Length: 143
Image 1: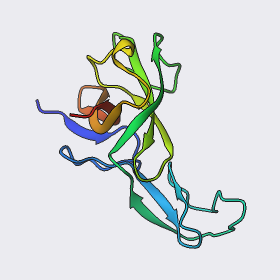
Image 2 (image 1 turned 30 degrees about the horizontal axis):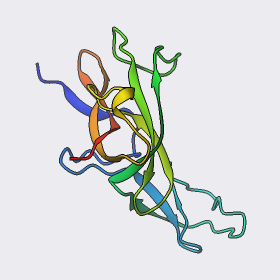
Image 3 (image 1 turned 90 degrees about the vertical axis):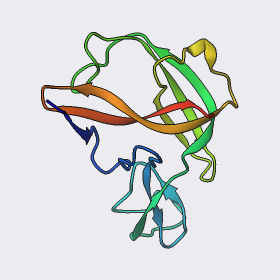
Image 4 (image 1 turned 120 degrees about the vertical axis):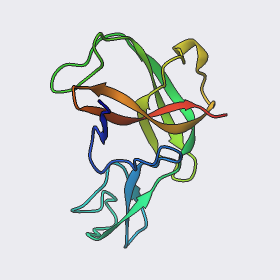
């Protein structure tokens, strides 16, 4: 049986397997960009805007910081079973200059990462059940 690929978090990223993007919003008043999306008020204290446009964020950026995760996250968060430790990277997006944290793809260890290293956004399975593969964004070293 073929499993259905569904986003683990609806509306936070596109499901394009070749060129996925995180989805943010841009304030129509001051042009500040937010991730996750903002829908009620501009987070810029000097603005006060309340209207936003959905915008695709940069697919590439540079490692700002990184660490490893050696423990399964607590409920309600999900992880693959059995749990396997993984690296986490805080990546500064190329155009927006905002930091977005995400898991690093399997096979890339903490020792492989370094500050300033170029990364790109990809989609990967977070966990699965009998019917679905739950997909999230992850970072991988840029080719």
